[in-house]
Length: 521
Picture (tube, rainbow, N blue to C red):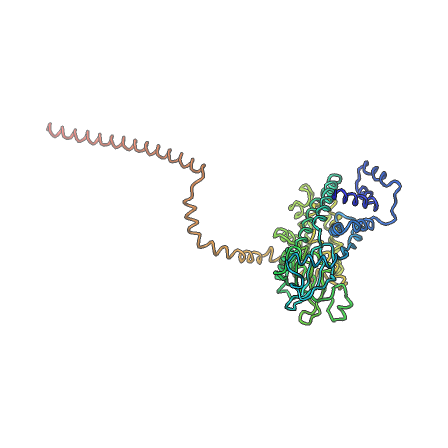
């Protein structure tokens, strides 16, 4: 009953904001055009379609808002006017009662709040769709932030995800373009992100890993987790003091070097992505602050680690080869990589794809680097992808989203930010480490402990290999060979014995003949 009640609310919202007409407008078959006219009969909407979509998602609640935020990164799937509206989605929601928050903390740790903390602020400092945060102090005086999971989220998320899966199935059935863009995989990936966010221990582990990775960079700070006070529903972490990065005037008044801050953000991102393959994938201004503490002045402060992106070595190698080809303007190589990776159908003509990629990228290379917008390049590449039926890889959606966020944030801080001039030396060094002689040395160094363990065992392994039992086919061949060899040996023995007997006979006859002659003489 809960499922059908929620479905009724969704259907009513779809009809209220005209999303049914919006969905049918993308279907080209005649029967769908007729259906669109039928459902639009007597209905009109003054607001643009992008505004209607955004309002509908906001009305449906936090889970659909988050899905809209993920959808806002899919410029290959969503038209630009809708992207602009979806990017405005915010998941700020009213906080749940302080008494309920206290009860959840006490349930998680089995002790009263007064026994856990020296002080606990009932009013949350931040409230989002998944959790809210309270400031507190420990008994030893350390300042901490307490993140409490919003109650009842799992059932709500599972119900809404079930409905989204149903929608994805119908999109794939009704639209060839929908099948190419893998809506079910997008929903599955979205489901993974949401369930990861529901496990706060996972978020704490993400923060700990990111803190270790960034420890030697001296550009960004990550709060320390209090592991003895972390559970799946509540985590306690070091409280960070900083100014939200969106408060530019306050940062300027404090003496922060804003252009350097923009460059540092690019360096942090590329280090996380291409060195570590482990990056903060929710880097909107609400999750980023800047330290004004004299000891850490001007450093970034990263918060909220529920969404973390990872890249495999295969992903990184593919990106490395594409970057090399782009920097060299080798568009044929870019086209070949796309075909070899299976991103486009195997029958795609290399020269046609090469020409399309060149038309997108070449105009940007002839402009000053500071005027190149990665967002515009990606947007045009995604438009080109429709023509060639490029299959968008879900594992790279987070990387694309974060890269666009970083560029937008960097240009907000410094409109003259030269993104590629900042990133290119790092990328070139990283690519040399991935595909050059440094890659060989790094691989040897990585495998050295294994080799060191293996070398002393080589004599024994060689001996065992020589003694190992042959396969059944080898055994049959060897047996047959032995039988033939025995038969040959018997034949040779017979011949030798016969020849020997013959020779002995001749010798005996010769001796007898001589003896007879002697006796006769």
